[in-house]
Image (cartoon, rainbow, N blue to C red):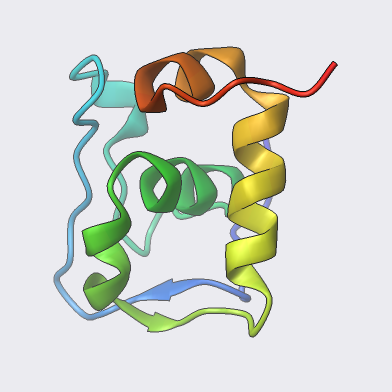
Length: 83
């Protein structure tokens, strides 16, 4: 299991839900926030950015790389993956 990531931090009481498939394993609070889950939610629901207190300066670059590395997310967003 990935360690809790300190680069990303949600506001107190914030809860992120999976809008793609409703996967409860992707429900996130600060208690279980990992970099991959933060990137997943920022990729699939960019408006959730307002629920974060802390984001790395280059998080948008990381989100783009995350989308390219995850076909399910890319398909949901209608993004072509670079081969």
